[in-house]
Length: 230
Ligand SMILES: Nc1ncnc2c1ncn2[C@@H]1O[C@H](COP(=O)(O)OP(=O)(O)OP(=O)(O)O)[C@@H](O)[C@H]1O
Ligand SMILES: [Mg+2]
Image 1 (cartoon, rainbow, N blue to C red):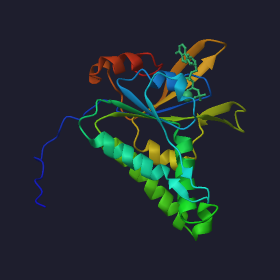
Image 2 (image 1 turned 90 degrees about the vertical axis):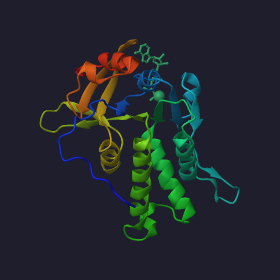
Image 3 (image 1 turned 120 degrees about the vertical axis):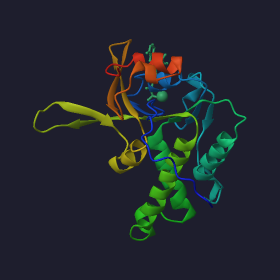
Image 4 (image 1 turned 135 degrees about the vertical axis):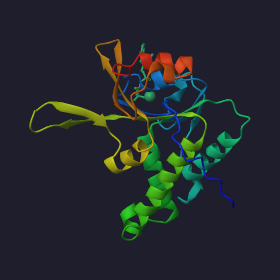
């Protein structure tokens, strides 16, 4: 393959977020907020997608009666990515609702395929290495699509011994969070106060975005509704 190098001069960075990470407590408005992004497709794990308006696909491992895998979520996700690469689809946003469960399902699929109970049963490091490669591949394939990608995660409370103030963090395990988040541009925390006061707060960002950077008007309005965005 012949490679043409780019011209040796600075380029203007593309400054619009495309990969999002949303976390928050149950019923704090994660799925609701994500569903307002343009032309969404939701990859759902928790079975409550019927309550949302975004078209959805239920991600699951299906077993045969002998316990073997009839359908692996890894193959299913692969098939979805291939279908999305076809330029004839009109989706503009893909929502992973929730990424925590997808990680568990990928882990399960690898275990069933290898006849073990847990990744650590596969011999030192091997199970985890297969898992990491699979998750990394999934995240990178998603990122390479010309779509908004939204990862949804639940929330954990950790107690800071020094201040005594509990901190709310994504529930995704740190090592998985780093893989997913290394590929995200914006982290948004959803919260609900009382019966019906919902808030969204930007807790991390790749760049200091300006409203003018975000060309899609709908996305810009959605982000304007998040505290600390601009
Ligand atoms: N900003 C909002 N304004 C008005 N209603 C909202 C808002 N956000 C969420 N809701 C309402 O709250 C309900 C729960 O929200 P949603 O399903 O998005 O929660 P979730 O964080 O995805 O919860 P879960 O973790 O259980 O999936 C929705 O049915 C929606 O009607
Ligand atoms: Mg939800």
